[in-house]
Length: 179
Image (cartoon, rainbow, N blue to C red; front, side, top):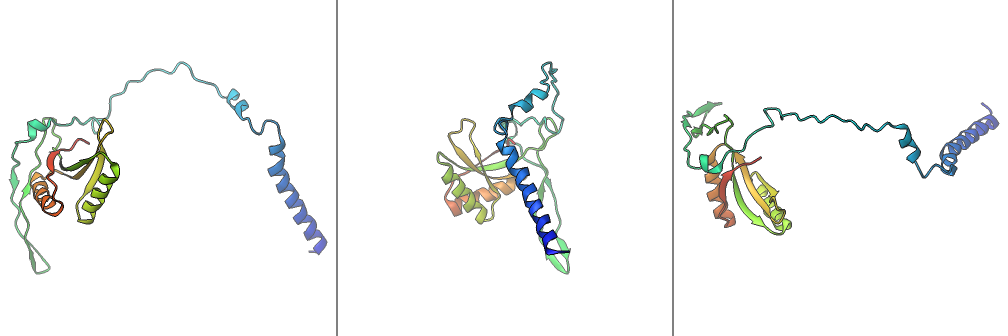
């Protein structure tokens, strides 16, 4: 192809691109797109649809006092032999069930802070130490609480609570998980 034809094609492409970009900006309606909303019909008679939540999302939070003193049944576990090595397995607690049949889930409330930064620092320290830590803001928004858990195994959380007290000098409390 000749050089002159190449230059003409490139020039035509550049001019076309400029026209596509610049010409709409010169239009008086370029800054105001409200004219587009006139073509959309606004629905005014929307029926009210009260729908119940699916059963999986309609979980009633257990009353903490109703399950606080229940002792879970133990499921005995025997030691396991894997690749010629004996592995000691602790007994497993059968989860405590609420009246609805939902398992009660616990977590440790480790601390509560007025400054969110302090809560995040403690959460990060707990995570570095190997705990499953998270934070939640209180309903009134004034405090940020730090938790470890959740678990259906209250005994395991009690053991973690003792370790947290030793490592971090914090007296946490085990509460029912409301999530």
